[in-house]
Image (cartoon, rainbow, N blue to C red; front, side):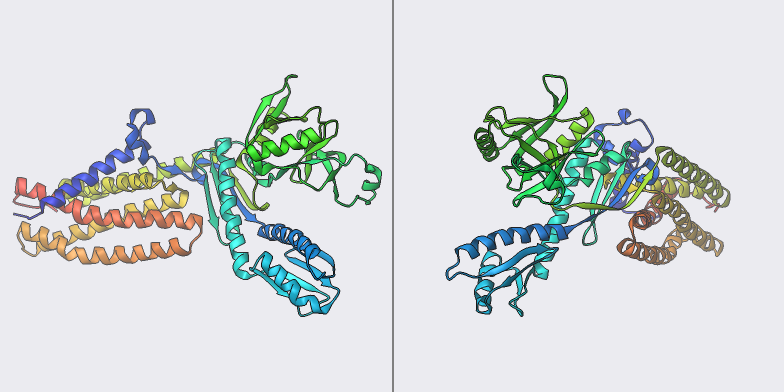
Length: 525
């Protein structure tokens, strides 16, 4: 009698039931499967479902520039209040360096202490007092870059989720890049517009005393900017405005933004501020009744209405030449929050749904043909008994891979399908090794029990060695490969583990139970 422990039988039963139930959502209608088992539904990649692939770069240098500008403002105040007085000139921020000149060389130590008191992560190059250079340390630059990446990923996720994209993949890639995959996306241009805006909004007063003509000729008044109103329908610049640089209310103090219709049935964006923003907005509007203020988004004027009365309720509306879609997009941007730094699209790929469907059909036909040919081959070579065992093992192997991929929420791509196809061959190969060994043992005169037992024992080491080397290759591919290669590595690694389970446990369990029950005189293998 062949020995096969009861715990192994229970394990095989549990795993087989798991494979069948959690792979069901991939073969039948979702409505006919209980919600619990829908976790096994496989998520298809862009090459199978269609959609957009974007590789974005976070321009973290601009975040360094912004922080250095803040340092420059604090430094000006500190220098103004310094005693004894420190003479300086040409204080400005250029790219990722703050530079200025000292009038007196003796002030070098004083200025260095002032700067380090503002931020001790700054590095001061004071070799030449006539050209002081201030920049962040490498550790601080890394911290700023990591903050920019993580915050950008969170904001991107909010913006994409607001649009309702199905199961987006948003992840960091390298030091300054973000990978965004949007399966099933219908309008990639809209997503690009949403991701391309930093969405830094603020409310600033319009300088109505300055001359527009002089500003257009290059003579912009100190403390002001020349900005243009942007037509949201066409995206083109229209009216120029001279806007004070001083920010009255920041967009960071918004708590909600929604598209709506005004009394004239025109699309607008309704805003609601937090308590601090409400107070500032109320002060700004109450002190400037009859004057014009500008709503500025990423350096462009959305609208510049005249303040008719004080707005103290903490809410307001942005009106302009909006369509409902552009109003909705602006509301999405404001709700999601501003990106810490601008994003640049480095790479863009789009796959149409028809191409993805063709890929799925081609993969399914190839898999079905391969499985049918393998099933026929195993039945012809090893007969109705052992051939059926090999085919049951193969089918459970495939269902187990699909179930695990679904439960792990993995994304199946074309290279992943190739990994599953390779697994079919590996699963058959393992059973071939076992059955050939059993055949040899039987022909050499061993008893049926001895042939089966020795067949599995002798083939065990060969199967384990072959599969472990393949598993190591899959791990290396996953570690050092890019997206498509990783998809292949994941399915290959899963296939190795499921093949070892089905060939060494499932096949042996079925053969053992069959033999102990029927005790045939001849194995017929």
